[in-house]
Image 1: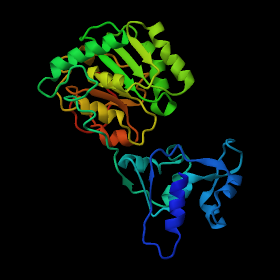
Image 2: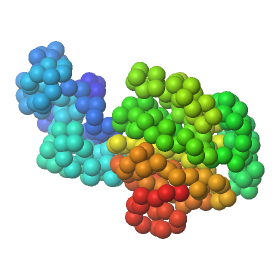
Image 3: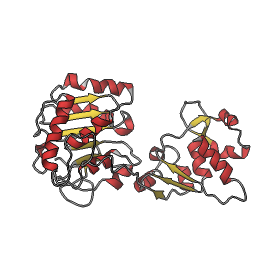
Image 4: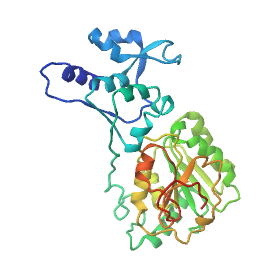
Length: 324
């Protein structure tokens, strides 16, 4: 962030400048708030202080006035953009969504959201080096069943391709809703379903995750590691992807998951269609993909609105709280 701000300083405040500076907000929750006294360490002109000046009600890092790097980036740039069109709208809804910078963004309109990209070659199921059985649209049905069995064997769950498999891959923190997921897993006991959770993050959540196998040996596995090969196996072998984020600037998991099997006609006969999805888990979540595709089960903030098709059972518009 410091280098970006130095660019704003050097390029944005010379009367003869020809360059324009764009500032991209990825996640507005990470702003760079520091004690106001730290401004002196930046060796910037005092004229910059109003752009940095910020006050909130939090006691960390200090109580009272602070400096805020992200606020300065917004104020001093020529163009402000973010990583999805819907996130553009959310950031000015109020202090909750805009994390106390909504007012700053309303004075300098945020108008552009460019959706995240992904590596379509890394996530190509016909060539994926981490997937045991490669497949395309013509071989998906047979390959998916085999990949599911290999995934089940890899994590130590009962091997049965007829059992629906639900996966979560992501950081273990409140933003990603992983605490909601972990708390809801007991409600799946008795259902014909398996759940695999992969991620690292907050220590408490990692510890809770590691207890899933102990508590629910036949239906759940929690892996508190960063494991790229296993993530690929989980997408290739699962039926449902859970994305229960409380807020999501854009997100890559849903893009990667749908790249692996969107438009591949699969799971039309799965018993997964009979699962009673827990209302506790999906308090404000929705099924957004037609049932003949891999089904991301998503909340509806930010870039998830822009990247996941709305509707349930081929109803093309609107969000629905559905049970599969």
